[in-house]
Image (tube, rainbow, N blue to C red; front, side):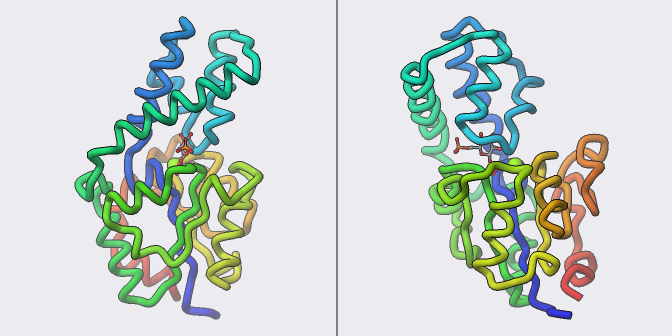
Length: 218
Ligand code: B16
Ligand code: MG
């Protein structure tokens, strides 16, 4: 058995909580279109690409739009979203994440990002953790969105580690399904009722201890 494993982290909902900023930016678009867009609706967008997110919102409001309008709203949404990230710093890293990254580095493990976001790099830079990642695969690098395992398979491949020796940390159902389809170990971060398809589930990284990481490595 290879004791160098690939530890692949999703970004939003795992490393940082950018869902709240995505929500604010999408809400502006929805309001302008007279679509009622709630926090509950926002759950549908987790782990989903920007383009698909807009389609979901338009479906909620039963709004049909031209590609030209859609492109305009996608640009507006992203500009607005980026404006919320301007002041982002290390204080936005979710509890326990840094400790886990440090432990994995000490243990010489492969560390990758596997995110649907096209803004992943600036977020890792702003929060000061870019250097922990050996490999970054994000929304700019894949053609198939989660639950397709492409993003995670690509990360493992770039780390030159077998998918079976890969562990994925994910907060979305689609992401857990992607990890499972890729025959990787799936670790759900969030609610058990939502992430029950995961091999392991934790509320957050403060619940993940050294013994668990060592178990995954060995
Ligand atoms: P962007 P993840 C995902 O990040 C978010 O969960 C999802 O809500 C968002 O629509 C998607 O990134 C695309 O983000 O607009 O920045 O390209 O959870 O896969 O890290
Ligand atoms: Mg996520």
